[in-house]
Amino acid sequence: MDRHIFLVGMPGSGKSALGRRVASKLQMPYLDTDVYLTESTGMDTAQLYEAFGEQAFRDGETRLLEDLINATPGVISTGGGVCLRDINRKLMHNHGVIILIDRPIDDIMLDIRAEKRPLLAQKGKEEIERIYGERMPIYRKAADIVMDNGNGFHNGLSMLEEIVRRYAG
Image (cartoon, rainbow, N blue to C red):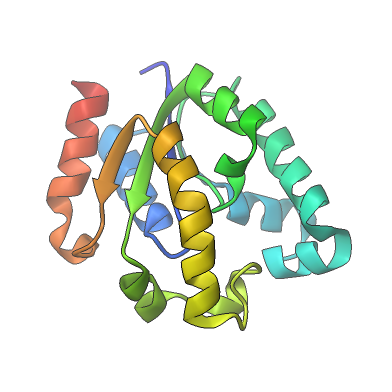
């Protein structure tokens, strides 16, 4: 396969869990952009935001995407804000397929560890609803495929199989 699979969606939507499964199934490399930035800087995303601000964090995400497009195709779980920049959406479209993992806000709230989500930390459901409302139209417009994670991945093997079928088919 000669194209990346980019997973986009809200923090807590299940991108990382699904990404690891898809990468294993397709025998492709897997990368989580937030984990990579954390490992390469020695700071978690909340610390990066605090130390450098959102603009610098988003610039780092863009540089990472620019580096990744020339790497061996893989499954890439993107941070929740990667899709917000036009340049990032163009990079992903030109070098892969974009899959939106859509999950209801109530399900996200049940699972999310807000202290590890810099834009959601201590904000609660109202802030998550605001961010969801702001980002979801952008995610939907960018997505080549929308996958519903409303039932969770414990019932979602069919979601994995569908991604593999669409991508590899």
